[in-house]
Length: 199
View 1 (cartoon, one colour):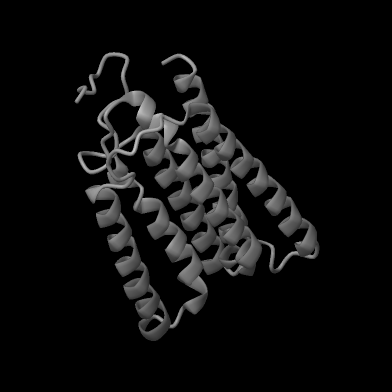
View 2: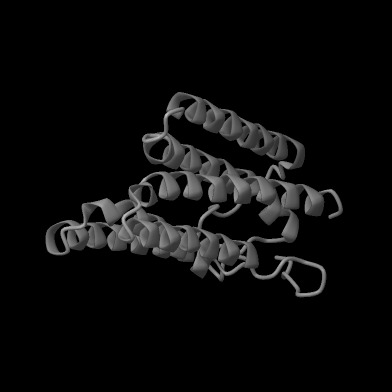
């Protein structure tokens, strides 16, 4: 097994649970994460962000177009740089720990907000915050920036909502989260292509 070094090769990605054999294999798998991110972005846009807007159908169709663009890029990256490897699982220990922690936090927080604090309108902002924070353990700068961006949208949305701006709980959370996820999904594909083209 070739060791991943700090000079010129990608850092030990996703802690020990998401480490790959080499830099090329890690980036060649970026298509999956970007595709998943784009689909979740569409969900935020479709079900929450566009709901209270006068031009909701147009916003949703624009979201579909952006998502298809990212998915096309994901498909292209996979086709162009497929390694043909059937080695280890694409998601390792730390990924699943983070996902389980996220789900538990979402369920418990949802119960507290609805049954204890009686603020059900705050649930989407809380979910976006938790989704953002679950990227932190993945251990790379891009995921930390993604976590920070999603958390920032959640905080701004909550601030607006608590100030009496109802759109903070819906449009800001939905469209803000969607834009962040689409942006990072596309950026991940571009970075992966640049790295793979030179490796």
